[in-house]
Image (cartoon, rainbow, N blue to C red):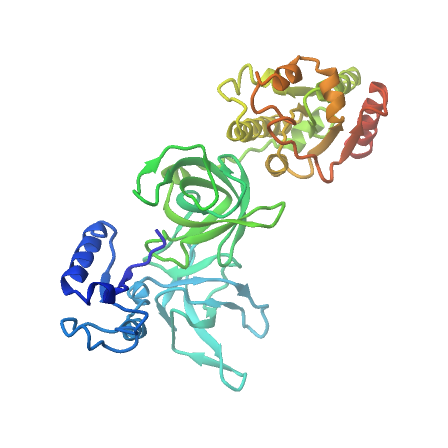
Length: 484
């Protein structure tokens, strides 16, 4: 999975079987049969006795039948860099130096291949081609010096013959062998977080030079590391390996991991905790990423909202079941409607009767529930509407995802803060009674967690205030920030 191609089969404790060649050969044959389908380039079997030092540093006199290298001798001489041999030129741009005296350099490290002055290169994102004018590096005395060529592993500054649009995160490549550029791709994920991975969650995807928003759009399977069987699943837990599809907010430039490890790998970062939650290996771009393109439209969100004499906004009400989200949202909409505002309410229960009727209440389904609603709310905001979303939306990650989808300037998080005991006392739909009796599983606040907002735009404390005061609090924010 990680691209390791050279294996040392260290058969230790050979002294316990009297340095038996037959036993060693049987183990070697069994391992080679097991590994036949795994694509290793070399498997070197070495009989060892670590306790007595046999074949660890020097050849052992106890095994005259073995004529291979010692373990240390082999590790010192095996070539593990041959995977880069013959690879096309790849230069991830890490920094663009400021132009001065006709010098504008693109700095980075050659990930693979070689390049020489005069060679033609392409800017991966735009496809524009140009030539290498200079290759600059630093001499031992700290001064700049020019090179005729640069190879993989060298850190250099490339000066191009033409003024081209190229920035940090782009890749310079050969004109004839270019990397892929797509916003959707299939990958293998090694999950590192204690919190499981669910489809629909968004993260920060980071490569050597790029950092962009990304969403896990599909979990296709997990991989059993003992049998290599693919198992259908909706989540990936810590230390598990999953096959997934990812969508990025912008086009990512990459090679597949098999073609180039340096440009085919990434990590995922949780935007809230800044935790590195996964390592990823890109396997292939998705075909639909090449066939689907944004259609440019002349009338945008701002124009549609101005026609309605308002500013498109999504008010996202979150809180426990029974906290009063739907009641407050309904009163706010009634007031806006009387004033001639163009509004729409997306209520959790109502949406589950139609758009999300196929979803349950597992954590995976809750993630997908919020993802769909966020996309619908975004479309309604694009139509210029004021959208009031009333959903428990228990997880901070999903609410942050919704903020990113809709747009930080149009998203207003409203925390309807009602104590659990008060929500259970109200129990307007009889759900708490069922949950306490064990008749309702995955109920938020009982056997499924609720993560309250840390910094909501509006914090409504329902126990201390009347419904009129709570509506007024929302409306004052609206008039201050959004009223036209």
